[in-house]
Length: 404
Ligand code: UD1
Image 1 (tube, rainbow, N blue to C red):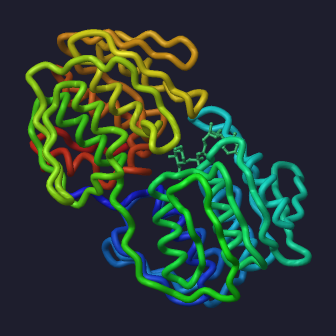
Image 2 (cartoon, rainbow, N blue to C red; image 1 turned 135 degrees about the vertical axis):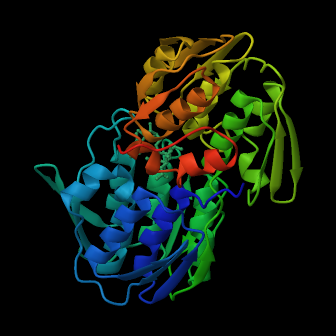
Image 3 (cartoon, rainbow, N blue to C red; image 1 turned 60 degrees about the vertical axis):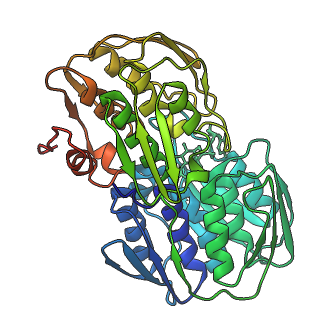
């Protein structure tokens, strides 16, 4: 099974197209509802966007708007990553303040304080942010108190065309940051150090268009691996980037799965009964990714013994726990810690997705459950997985989509 392109890379890459003022061609863009919203935002701003299969072409030579309508900000809070790009392109930006969401409060203080330091004036009015740059963006030293992925991306987007040099310290090191830097450099930017905690950006006068392949989705890959593990099925994943999966693969090995990596392919052979996971702690990259916490917890639900998870990134990322217990899982949550006592089998029930990765976890658990599991609100899952039910059906699962 081929793994689709990374959602979390595609969104900032599409925002970055705004900076090029010409035509950018992005290959391996996944067909996801979040990508659809991002394309709508680009069109609203004035870009010509064409999509053919997994290739998206963006022509940003004409930009007419500098705002993001409230409905799109509400629907996809990560559209905040447009802020740096719109400011760099037009010198002003207007968008809503993203409020709380399904993962708990999602502040943007790190984004805003970094942008202010770069010369952006920000005025907040009834939940709308009015931003402007009077004297041009200027490179500065930006030190983050936490390596926020979105804030690192926003600063990169705001400074590739700024005057002077920007140094980001305690930058996020996620593979999606490296993908953004590779794209920007292919457009003529001068970004060094992406993937380490210090990123140096020397501003350039202009960028030009380029052609780029989005990296494979490491979270979609981890989700398919958990689906294989809970059902005791060997599967082969193609088109993966093994280095990006390094934080998650040891967890599958701990569960007793055999893994064989050959180039861009990975085979998983699960044991008859999974072993428990001693301690899964979510951390910024290269730590264990918070986005893989829920699908891998679904796997731990059927392990032989007790597993412990600690969620260190988001405050409220255990919404799937209540629904997993409806399927017969035994889980106790206290603050950031979840203790999972593995059971011999889960049993099918009607459950409800409350967020993207939690929804995927319910599908994974449903595959292992005896009888029928109905997962409602699958629109959350469509935000980050390309036709998940078709992928799993091709791998042998008995799964169909009903109207949501
Ligand atoms: C990105 C990913 C998301 C992933 C997350 C962490 C995208 C589109 N989304 O989200 O899937 O789960 O990284 O790997 O790429 N924070 C602040 N102030 C800020 C910014 C963040 O306090 O200004 C906090 C957040 O509330 C959270 C933590 O920092 O607790 C991590 O957030 P961040 O790394 O910014 O995640 P996102 O970029 O939103």
